[in-house]
Length: 566
Image (cartoon, rainbow, N blue to C red; front, top):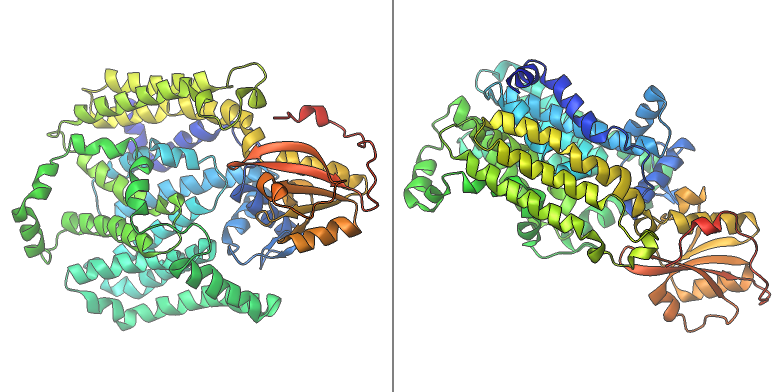
């Protein structure tokens, strides 16, 4: 194990790439795209392939929710590797996760941390359950986090003592990376590194440096990158599109969101599960001193006594805590927004793990017990299903559940057997053992859950009837849920008046939530329900309706027997 660790320390970038591949190899085409973001982003990418690369389209109309940088990355991966969609979506996620690890390595070097800190932090992230899971979910959050961390690293270098002669260029680099983060997912890509930098400088009594003339080139880069896209979007879509971006997508989501509204303490509850198993680290850390008034008074008194080590810890703590505080102030809250807070915590934990005086065996035992608990839960996975097991697996067993349980158990056993070993060896072993539960979860369990997690069965049914002359309609469902698998836009009705008009004028194949179906008081008697699927917390129906009111025998549906009925 020591030889393997020496190789990782010598070639950390290649080593983390290999460990990422261990977790993601063979999973790019294992399952369908799930509700709701995966299928929506897939349709936006399909629009990009049809020429909508500057302003994304969703279900055939402009899509103001997301800027285009992540989708440009997907297209580049498609061209460079020849990986078509939908596999390229999961390749993009894996590559983005690797970029997060690389950004962490660079940040560790900029902070002048010990050589082993960056690779250790990478292993911490790869063994974090939340991060390992996100490597297999198609979103832009990993790329977003990578750019934020890279921007913070550039700011750290720009304001490091002795780098004043390069501050303008480094600040311009930081602003450019923050601008790319902004064009990946929104203004938090700029807010996170800016707030962290200002808080650190204020803590050190250097706040004025942020407003020096050396920052002007960086401001120019920021404006050039962001507003070049904004201006282009204005000319392509007009002022109403910008109103949707700046008012609905930014201002309203920050102050009074129309969905995902949560109380201010939401992340205090959501964060601990996202940081497992490392949320258990306090069992080995000297946390008692945090309750001592002398500790805090001494910390405040020494705030201007700089050293590379103290500066590094200050940067990392401000990054983690300021990001958590900033997120808590926003009206809209989603668990995945926590992702940029994990890298600084991983670096802090990696620093602590190098202190051999601490009783790390306590952490390994506690984490091992946690993995055994997860293994026990996984063996009973069918008990947590929202539908009868027969809907997912006619054989009566949840595919892959026992293999996932075995992987968790292997992690627990590994931690117990290695609990007295050096932390580096334990983390390395755990990073390899993580694949023992990730691979069966992604290649066997997740595909079996497509029937309750993906709109693909409904979309393929809509597509079949569309080919037979029916008009597909989705009533009061997230925009663009069915467009990707349908192969093009679908008519969408937001109210029953519009729906009544559709069924009166067209031969319609309709997808509708059960509760909306039950509340449809003007539903014609000849609307015939033909399929039901539980998805995203509720049942959905697919129904047929001919405008002449006839009740003809159902047309043949090729492959319909492959769609399991609940």
